[in-house]
View 1 (cartoon, each protein chain N blue to C red):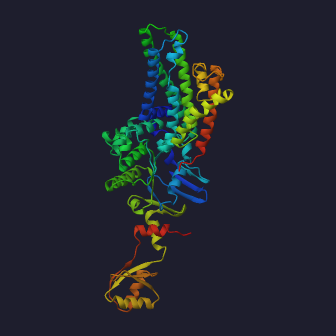
View 2 (view 1 turned 60 degrees about the horizontal axis):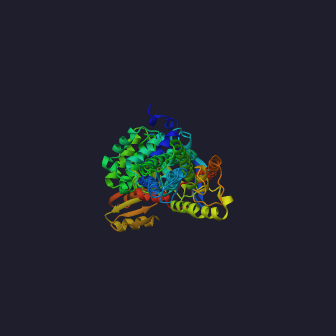
Length: 248
Length: 313
């Protein structure tokens, strides 16, 4: 499994798509942190979330994971991947772990960059800054969310072979379906894996996340467990499909 | 022992054994009860027209397609049960695909890592297939068909496997590339490797194959040593004698008088169907007709191939 995991990480590092999207995630996160810390006057209570929660890694790692697994079908590299690792379950597990690890690394990179830029601007403006422990806690929670969404992306990507359909479907589920549910059926939407559960896992309030007052988010630990349940269900379905499919 | 050499036991038993493989796609019978073996130290040509079921058979052998019945075995084991598959079986499939944005070298690095082969093997196989550093460090989307095929072969050789399976490997290769491929196949067999190479052209593998397996419509038509299979094909329609005489018209009349079916190729040569050269010679001698040419008419390689694979449904 270690060799397969390593191979999957080399795959990630050796394509421009991953580098470009990861750089975009870092850039957007930094831009948001710089704008908020430069243009607003956060209070001691709000500064942690206002400035330092602008980690875009979770969405980007989700997209990257879907692109990563569906790209195996698009470029037909799935054949050489499965010749090297005929156990399809192990192959999918290695890819899932690889994107979880990539999510953690990307999130930590963003947290470090945002912390440096945010603290620098706030200090120059003589505004309050969060405690180091608070920053570290937020970075860990964001890394956990990125890991969960990286794994979830692979699992749901394994359900759909067409890359365009997979990516468009992901965007629709995230920005249309779950957003609509949050507005109209918040008691159901609190279990949504794309917005509600990641927000709750990161211990960010619905109000701070812009989800409105109607939705009651789960506790962080419970939300993480619910995310794991989503990942498990999608992984099991994706693995069953992968094992049944003929590679003609 | 290096990782590339670990777990080798394939050639200790039989190289490849296909046992009653059967596959249907909906109403289409792609492969029906196909059985044959491939021996170590020999190049076996796997022949059949396009759509005969060759690729489906190879993919079932490699665990990429689930057979409805039967099994493909390497040393008695299914591909997915081999302890170190890419070190035991090297594969080049017809539609060898690569991520277009990844360099050739990185493609091999991924496969070497996944297959637990020493990373030093990447440069070794690149040299073996004549892909220099400039080409190896270029993204695959800029590769020609021939370069892609060489990269696919390099990937197959990563584990220095004892069995090589190549599906239409000459596709995209220029004449020097085809010669290089032929030499590679022979050299691998000379090292004791079992080589199974599929093609829809008999002439392509005739110069390198020791044995052939011929299929058509997913059904085995012939298998065995190349000469034996060609000999059988030649005899399938009865003997044909090629004869030319100084007085061709007289000889033709004599032969027709014996009920022999004749055919003229327009250059004075007569093809006598259903009789061996001795019988034709005897008729000519009996009537003192001088012959200028007499012999058995052999089918060309392609004619023999067509004879074997023609629709017999």
